[in-house]
Image 1 (cartoon, rainbow, N blue to C red):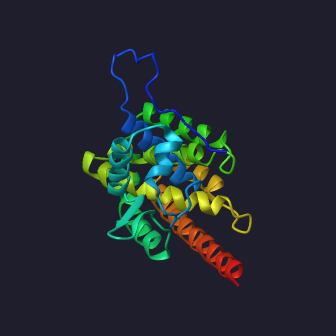
Image 2: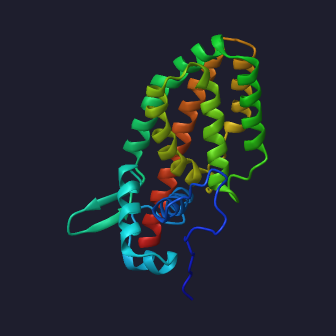
Length: 238
């Protein structure tokens, strides 16, 4: 049975009178499917299938694919088509290299200039994440996870650092979702998040070291998840 998802704008417009274009609706829908793993890494994008599924013309489909390629979620190779970007150990290592270079120093600066409102925002972000299931609601959980990490550096972040880190956080989401789906790789982040928040809230410089350890642990767990995935693929082929 063919699935159809109508992306045409609702008759009810936002209060500001501005609507969301069909292309942007399609970008959001495809991004969620890629981040959640519904569109598997390496899978080929078939434009006609997307047109049928979302009841749109080829123009918004091509525009959406162009945007997602710019975000690094899709790759296009001439004569080979467009595919969902694959997951790889070298990429996740590079992503975490940048995170470890930037985030501990930012959280240390943030810890010293934060306001009570900043603390409340971080606590709310952690509570939101705690109330979500990372397996049943992978995208929502990872969005909350990203919001929590962002809340810890926002007081010290500049537009430049946010511009650098936000796409990195988005890419990391795909790897974290894979990790949470593998029971062999027990996530350790929950307790670590609470420790980091407590140190940051209390103005302790130790928050930077705790965050760095947390990121290193995440890198190692994702590496284990990728190895498990690779071994499972090899077994399936054999």
